[in-house]
Image 1 (cartoon, protein in one colour):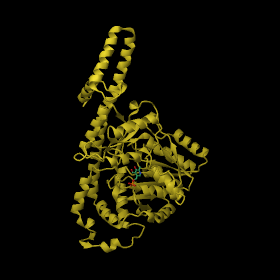
Image 2 (tube, helix red, strand yellow; image 1 turned 120 degrees about the vertical axis):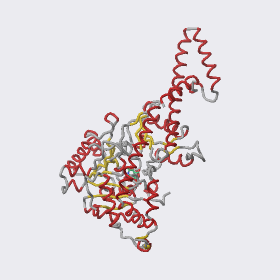
Image 3 (spheres, protein in one colour; image 1 turned 60 degrees about the horizontal axis):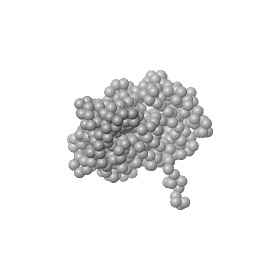
Image 4 (cartoon, helix red, strand yellow; image 1 turned 90 degrees about the vertical axis):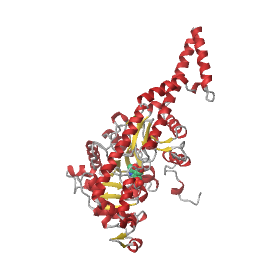
Length: 494
Ligand SMILES: Cc1ncc(COP(=O)(O)O)c(C=O)c1O
């Protein structure tokens, strides 16, 4: 142990958070409709598998892109040999055009401001290395993507100070919350270098309103710090309000060519919008030439391979295809989100209103035994091990209210989603029954103290319970009559 570096042995990676633990449990017992129908359903992974069937036919129709050919002639040697780490100009052009298209062409991007990285993971870390030193801080609105603890902190030594947002206003960022986080950082003697937002938000599945973006820009202008906007989910906005990029707001306020302009940086990736996380394609977009130059030098630690750039430039240059793909992607995301929201509603579970992303932010506060994170963890364990669904507890996203969970919906078939909802419904009804059974027993006991007739009822209640279940302790045993009643009610609602 003593021979290893501090970085290798420290635990700031977050590997032991419930977010990653849930993945491990899923891996041990993954659901499969045919081979493992009782396995764990993975709803803790923000993966977009809904449109892979559109990508594959494109590849079939464009064999040169996959076969590393140009006009039918092999360019294998050209791609296999040394790659200039600035990235292929053709790919950067195709990528910025695609970024503009996703934003309704309200803003355009210059390929010279782009740095290619191995996914948004690498883009975020590279920006930390460019903008902050070890011990400096970035402010992040909560709840935030659990991977940020790894991406922003682990190897850079940068600190994350949470901006606590709450359900009281739908988890929107407010000035008092930002100022409180800033004061908190100062108390800890940390130098605040910037604010990092995710728009659309992971885990909320919501887009940021223009006034929130104004507020953030005013704040970073006032404090002379940076703003990073991780816009990895920009192309997943499936219903109104439409997506507003921070770049659009800067332009609206005529802030281009100012100092603030140079302190705003965008992170993007094709992992979510195109559903290609395995290709590892991300980007930093910055208006500061010094940041671009430093990030390009750093990007040699995580370049995008030549054949990936070649293949994807061909795909992204096919404007007819990308347009149709995005429109179909929105439709499918919307349908799957709607199915999840309405299915959960029938089980008495509500979701935060959302219009984007690959997940819903789900309110299960009423299912907690107490308003604590211990109770949230207990509920999460039941859902993973008994209900056999992996979801991510709000605490792994640094939410300060116990009982919220992120539930992903775009990495599965419609039939798997239906099964997951069915499992959750049965679980909720079993909780309702336990609670009803418990209440009923308490009330019978109370009456029995005063009344011999009720004593008989209590006896018959015990007898009935003995008949129906034997393996669980009495106070937690489901009430047979209530079970059928509640199941019937839930079925009727369905
Ligand atoms: C907000 C956010 N940023 C970055 C990433 C990492 O993405 P990539 O696969 O491109 O590294 C994710 C992945 O879930 C994410 O949700």
